[in-house]
Every structure is written in structure tokens, then in C-alpha cells.
Length: 238
Length: 238
DNA sequence: ACGGTAGGTGTACGGCGTACACCTGTCAAG
DNA sequence: CTTGACAGGTGTACGCCGTACACCTACCGT
Image (cartoon, rainbow over all chains, first blue to last red; front, top):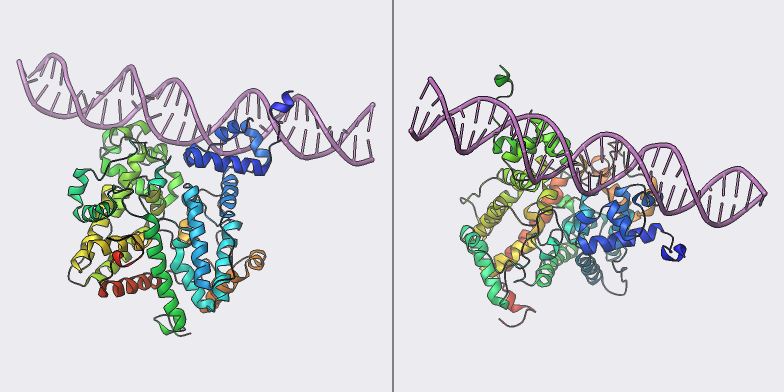
């Protein structure tokens, strides 16, 4: 009977999924080995029979969420394919707001991240990019590819972060900071009367993201058509 | 006599500078209130007479390093001004490799960060940008403005991060991962025989950074000259 | 029937942030 | 010159954290 109570015998995968769920629900700072073990109805040290340590747990969580990114489509041109891929990655990161920081804070990419990046390069190469140009494009897209940092003050990021929790809707920009940063305030105001909302959510994140993405993609496409190469620029002679 | 030994009576500024120095030297994970107090020749709780808690300490450190970014120059056009500013920010972040993660992990920007962003907007506005376009440009430049994430595997980032320390020079891409990610390997190889180095340091980070930056800036300039406005696009009618 | 082993348990250690009571040196007011 | 308030450094203690290590137990192939 006690058996039936704590069934499903604690797998590495079960641990990773529970960890992702815990981080999603309560923030990455609430993800301790002890809390996770409690969620799984088990003693903390039991986890160590399946993951080496907390760093490896984080790597496993990253692999789980990066694995949620849609696979590449090869029935469309490179630009559309990359675009869809990046938008899919963005959706994943919105579902798992702890992921950007977690990915960035690991000192080396996990297998899943490398695999994702590799497949993006593959799409570019198949689209006619030279290795040289594809290389630079990957650098140029950098944070866009995994959606990092595109919104420093993104409300979804505030969920359970290191700082103290405060009243959830700060209700428009507080006047004292609006006074200190007039240009920011001007922008916030312009965005606000666009759809009658507040600074945090007053602008269309999706629109902003696609604006930046399309700007980059258009520029890149232009370079590609010109057969751009780094040798033509200030780098020393090839 | 004991007086002369522990002189310079522990100021908030002295604490912040020591904290920045400690994080620079030993990594952000080595920055504990206890270690910092020891560096200052003082008992841990003494720090709390000058900073409210560790989060406020981090905010103060961010203000210190963001304050190192060069002030704006108004004797050049907007493009050159923004470019110099962003490159100055990048140099600061290279000096303080812990800063991007620290800035990103705070749930709201510090005063110094807001001030920096505000002055960038000011430069754009003075250069003839509409508030609308300046708004989108700030989003588009996003991570570039503070240099985040442009090199996921930047060697300078590995200094004292969460993971285990390993042999410092991995000496070119290990063959087994080169085999699993052929397109990455192809790119790494191309970069390597450009200057005979390895993947981690085989490409010219500065060049990559400026490539991406100039691509964005050129695209932005084009939009600016066209009098681009979001109303002309898929957003609903103004 | 039995020995090995995979996997869950309990205890313990050192480090963390920090609350709280305490002490001490300085300096203004009487 | 005394005094007492107060700014600022100290000491102790608490509850978290990750995890090393010894243990126990239930299953499984021989």
C-alpha cells in the first residue's frame, strides 16, 4: 500500500520535468534540491542517484526546454525557415522565463543548445550562405537566436527573480522617475497612448521583436545577395 | 596602533569598489558578504551598516560599472555618437565579465542603467529620430546596447561561473563534438585557419561585434532617412 | 537460497544571507 | 569636564543551501 502511494519510481526524466515545472511555477530561485525532492515526495539525496549535482540538473532542464523548439522546416526558403525557428524559440522562452538566464549562466552550451545552433547554421548553408557569411550571421543574430535580453524589463522576467516582490502592476511610470528620464518617459507615453496601457505592457512585445528580427534579416539578405565577404572589409587580407 | 591597521573607516563607496574588485578577480560566485567583509578586514555584519542587503550591494556595483561608460559626445553625428557609446559600454563589460549577468538578473534597472539608456535615447532624438522610431530602435538594439550575450561562449565569461573549472585551453574543438555538429565545426575551422587559433578565441570578437552593430546601424539609418513609422506597417491603424 | 547491486534514506558538515543584541568611540550640549 | 545619544563595528545564532558518506532494503540473475 505504501508502495502505491509513492509509485512511479523516480527517473532522471521525471526529475527534469518536475524541475522545469517547479522553475516555471515558482521561479528559478525556488528551485533547490530540497524543494524539488519534496515535490517528488522523496528525500533530497535521492535525486543524486539520477543527476550528478545541481549544475547537471540545470543542464538537463535546459536540454528539456531547448528540445521544445520546433524542428526546422525545409519546405520554405532560408529566411522564412530561420524566422519561424527563432519565433518558436521565443515562444519557448516565454513559457520558461527562467531559461535565458539559466542558459546564459552555464559556462558552456549544452548538447541541445549546440544542436539547435547547428541546425540553424545548416539552414543558412542550405540557403546559399558561405561558411564565412553564415559564421558572421550567427554572431550578428546572437541573442536574437535564443531571444535573450530583448526586453530588459520584460514583465514575464520578473516572476520570482532575485529581488523582492513588489506590487504587481506598478501602474504606469511613477512620476518621479518619469521626471528624471524624460526621453524614456516620452517614449513610454507615446507607446501608452497607442493602446492605452502602461509602460511595462504598453508596447507590443511581439511587434518589437519582429521589427528587430526583420531589420536584421533584411540587412542580412542584402549582404547575401551581394556575395558579401569579410575579406572585403577591414580584416587583414585573406 | 590598532587604529592605524584598520584605517579608512568603511564607506558605502569603499564597499562597492571592493565588491567590484572581488567580482572582477574571483568571479561573481565568490562574492559573498563574508568574503567581501574579509577583504575589507571587517566582520560580515559591518557591511549591513552601509548596504541594506546583498541585492542592494549588487545594484550598487552595477551603478559603479555603468558609471564607467563614457559620457555621450555631441560633437559628432548621432550614428558615430551611439557607436562610440556602445563600444565604450562593451569595453566596460569586458573589464567586468560578471556585469551582464548581474544586470540581467536584477528585476528592475538601476538608476545608472536607466540614466545610460535615457542618454542614448537623447542622442537619437537630437539626431532627428521621432519618438516612435527611437522607441523601436532601442528595442531593436536591445542587447547590443549593453553588449549582452553577443558571444555565448566567450572565454571571458567563463571566469568563475557556476560550473566546474576545467582545463583552461580546450585546444581546438574536440573531435567528437566536431563530428556531431558538422556545420559548427565547418565554421570554426574556417575561422581557425584565418588566424591559426582555436574555436574559443579563433575569431575576432571585436570584428564580430562591429559587424553586427554596423549592420543594425545601417539598417536603422535607412529607416530613418525614409521617415519610417510603425503606422505604415501591420500594427493596427494609428 | 543467496549475493550483488540499484536506488531510496538519515545524518552531518561547511557555507550562505542576515536578524538581533551588544559594545565602543566620538562629539554636542549642559 | 561630564554625560548621554548615536553612528558604526562585533558576536552569536538561525534557517536555508548543496552534497559527502554510511546505511538499509528490495529485487534479480545464478
